[in-house]
Image 1 (cartoon, rainbow, N blue to C red):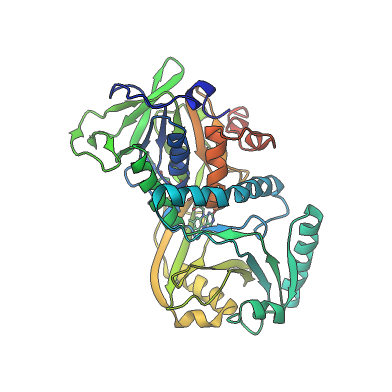
Image 2 (cartoon, rainbow, N blue to C red):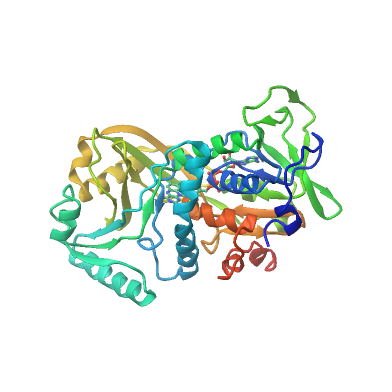
Length: 408
Ligand code: FAD
């Protein structure tokens, strides 16, 4: 049910400075900032606690909004979430651009999956049959047709699948825009680490900041420190700390979400002009690689998937793998300048579905566990939590955090 009705209809009315916030987000990645933005837009009094907003996985992400081309045989529930969120992206992007004055580089020009050998082609045909059964929009293309769409593709490409409805966006532009929009809406940014949750009886009533945290202030921030570790009161706390959500102190073990970090290394290359028109994906040497073009000539090459805990080192092996595979798809990538390499931590869950909605104990909600699709799923996550449009498709039940809590 997201934020309770009376809160959802409350308007800002100049409360006392120490009054509880209506909503407090722990974590200011693309998920926390999106929820904060939608909640503030509805007139709620909102705060975000994060020592380094927009710096987690959201800073690393490629920004593919590609539920169709990323469909896998065992993940139909995730596909439903992805399609519902993709449908929300055009309005989300347009409203955010208007609220912030930023261009998000949002583009809905499709994703092209390509294949090389006979085995790859057979796998592509199988996938096409599966997509057909699900009623997903796609076009099966020959190698020549692929190269007509994307002239820089390798001559060895023998066929492809175009998912014309898939889109992409620049996540770094999105989080910058969200921060600007939040500033305009007077959302309080608290540049501190949440060190635990405050309770009154069973119910969560706020967040305890790590000792030495700066005092709260508007988005611009205000200096000053409270060595005792201040408590920020809130009527609803939403845990949106990405890969770190499973290790927040102050939660009883059975309430901690089963979220684990899944490392991804990714690289940004630069050319004077874009060398691709749309996202291109392929399976090379058994691993999946994708290329995402930006309007300014940047080309994102991603991404590794590694289960190494909280390790965020960029390794020679990781970059070599990315370049080796990207060169198979588009030989010209080796001519491009390297602009940036980074490793991020995806918030993985046991069933690859996110945890979104009210949790136990009361007063706590979750917006975490978005794994490989947090950029895609940001609009839907915010809508489910802020209860903008109701949930007539049963999507809230698919990602209820209670599915894990009830099992324990
Ligand atoms: P994050 O962005 O990690 O933000 C979590 C925030 O919580 C951080 O800012 C952190 O500082 C803060 N935090 C942590 N602990 C605390 C604490 N105790 N107190 C306060 N704050 C805290 N998704 C897509 O949809 N499309 C893609 O193409 C795509 N590509 C990806 C490529 C890579 C290489 C990676 C790593 C991920 C990719 N993803 C993609 C996944 C996507 O990036 C994530 O699902 C999404 O960014 C998760 O957002 P988040 O806000 O939950 O987490």
